[in-house]
Image (cartoon, rainbow, N blue to C red):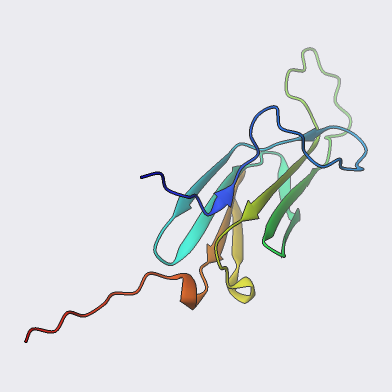
Length: 130
């Protein structure tokens, strides 16, 4: 039996909505985990300061945007790391409690905790012996 995932991730090659942003924009690699009580989103966003991260959840859509500030006064001999902002959106097909969403950022990894609404959590049913 196929399991329906609570977050829809765009398929490679799929048409995504146009974004009107200047400069380069990267899709950060993301891992998503689910527990009985929450969804966890882990996004690799190196080079972003915590106060330059914008996270929004509205109408079942999670938007993550991290703004990268380019280092100044550097003359590169070799430059392979591309500079640009991070941007990613997800359609969330799970009842989420938006008032209790939390996010932390440490060592270049953003963690977003999306707690499930009480009605979306599994319920244990007691069995009575007769």
